[in-house]
Image (cartoon, helix red, strand yellow):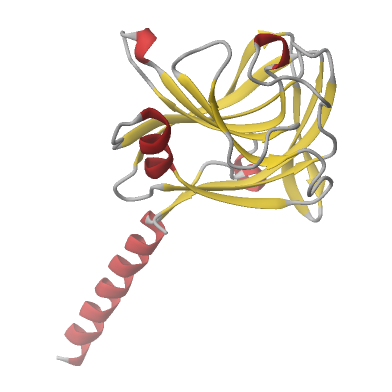
Length: 215
């Protein structure tokens, strides 16, 4: 009987461990996987994305010189289970007094965004962008200058916290409801982007520890 009891305890412990693990979904295992599963999308030239060691951790470095390209990863996330997106970013400089709400100023030293795929109805593809704004106040939201299906939300602004790692945590479902007026169950991808093509500027930014969580 004791052996049977011990077996049941082990099975329950294993099940509990799996449940706990399922509540966190990492999308940036740079130490073990590098950039496997990440793909580049160029909009105007190429931002240089490389993995480096910084503060004893492998992180993603983004260098942009009058260029705009993103790194994206296809990942299906159930927001009923893991609605929170977490990440760290470090910005070394902002892009000055640009108007980010117009096409000529639609550049950001750092952005992390989630993608909702419209499938064959490509015009229904939407994007929720979290940005480190050069001058918009924290909490400001606006439609993207190029696409009505993209919304921008400034989480950091200007030189505040420049040169420091900043940790972010956002409830994707709540933010999508606020900015698009819809309840969202799934997202289909995540991307990071440092872009300077419209302003002809330069930016150097670092990203690390991107993951989804249940709380």
